[in-house]
Amino acid sequence: MLPFLAGLVASAVLAPLRLAGLAAVAGFATAVYLVVGFEFSPMTTVRKAMLLGLVAPVIGVAADVAFKPTRFAAPLIALLSAAASVWVFLAVLRQKEIAQAVLLGGGVGAYVAWLVVWMLALRDDSVRAGAASLALGLGTGVAAVFAASATLGLYAMALGSASGAFLLVQMLTGRRTFAGVAFTLTAGLLAGLLGAATYHLAQLPWFVLPVMALVPLAARVPVPAKWPVWGQATGISVLPLAVAAAACFLVWQSSRGSPG
Amino acid sequence: MKQTVIGLTLAILPLTCVAAPESYTFDPYHTFVHFGVDHNDFSTIWGRFEKCSGKFSIDLQAKTGTLEVIVETGSVTTGDSVRGNRPRSRDEHLRSADFFNAVEFPRMRYKAGSVKFNGDAPAELRGDLTLLGVTRPVTLMLDRWKCAPHAVTKRWICGGNAVGTLKRTDFGMKWGVPATGDEVKILVTFEAFRD
Image (cartoon, rainbow over all chains, first blue to last red; front, top):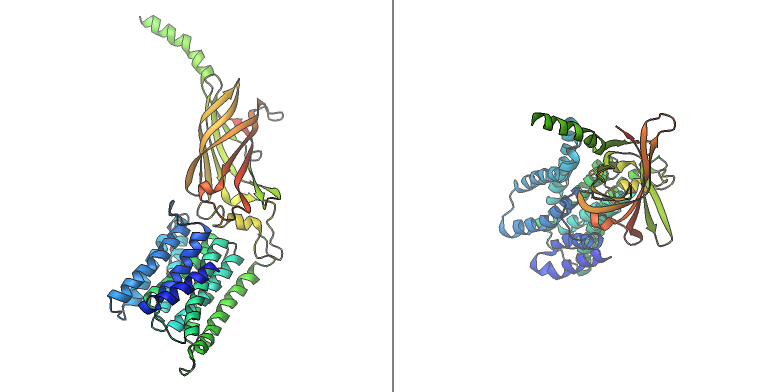
C-alpha cells in the first residue's frame, strides 16, 4: 500500500516538472526501506540489484533532461544494462562451471537487455509504459512469491503498484504525463533484475522469463486514439496483465505438488 | 656443553609430546548444527543442517584449542520439505534469498581460536561466524564433553554438545522479524575422531 501511495504522490506532484517517471523508483525505494532498509554491505546480489534500481532513475533523468535521445541510445543503454546485470550476478556465476556461467550470464544479460530496450521504446507513451510496468512488476512479484522469495516478490510488486499509481494519475486527470527514460529504464532494469534474481536465488523456472519478456510487446496493442485516457489505459493494460498472469500460472503449475 | 644440550633436549622431548595438540575431524554422520527460532510468539521451530564438516585441535595440557566448522546452508531442513498444495515448502523458503540465500552463500563458517576450560574439559568457545558474507563473534558453551575409545571401532573419539545464541539480523537476515524471531538458539551436537 505504501509503495502505491509513494508512487501516487510522486506522479501527482512531479508531473508538472516532467518528472512523474520517478514514481517507479519512489515505490521501489519505499519497499526497500520497509523490508530491509538501505544497507549495501556486504554487496550481495540483491543489494546490487537494489543499487542499480536506485541509480537507474538518476541516469534516466539525466538522459531526459540533458541528452537528445537518438535511435542508438536505447540499444546502448540496454547493452550497458546487460553488462551491469552480469556484475549483479557475478557472485552466483563464479560458483558455476565456465560453460554454465557463460550460458546463465548471457541469459540474464539478454533478459535484462530485452526488457530495457522494449521498455525504453515506450518512453514517449506514458500510458503504454505505465501499463507495461504495472504488469511486469505485479507479474514478477507474484511469480517470485510462488517461487519462494517474499523479499524479491515485495520489491517487484512495489514497482508494479507504483506503476499502477503512475497510470491512475493519468486516468483520473485525463492527461498523459511524461514517462521518459527515468520511468522506463527503472521499470525495465528492475523487472529484469528481480526476475533473474528469482530464477537464480529462488526457484523460478527458466521458461517463465521468456513469457514475462512478452509483456512490453503486449503493451503495444493498438487502441483507438480518440478513446479517453482512462479508456486507453484500461484497454492497453488488459493484454500485458494477461501475459503476466499466464507467466504466474506457469510458476504455480510447475511448483504444485512437486517435492521440495 | 654439547652433551648438556643433547641431555636437555632428550629431557624436554617427552614433555612436548604430551603437550602437543591433538587434531580431530568431525564425524559427519554424528555431527549436526541445530537451530531454534521463535514462531509468532507461540512456539520454537527447530531445524538443522544435514551437512557440515570441520576439524578441531585441542591441547589438554596447555588448555588451548582451535576449531573450524563449515556448514552447507543448502542442507537446511525443518521437517517441511514437501510442497503439497503450496507453491513452496518452508525449507525451500529458508534456502531462498529471504533467509540463507544458499545459492549465493552455499556455506557458513564458524572459526574459534579461543577455548576456555573448566577443569580438564573445554567449556567455552569464542569464535567468529561468517554467514551471508557477514562475520560476527559468536560464543558457544560446551554443556557436554567426553573423550573415550569408540565402543565398536576402538578409535579415540570426543563428543559433546555446544549451545549458543545469535541475532540473525546482525548477519543481515531480516526477513520475517519479529514474527519469526530475531534471536536464534544454536545447538551443535558433535562427535569427532582423532586424526
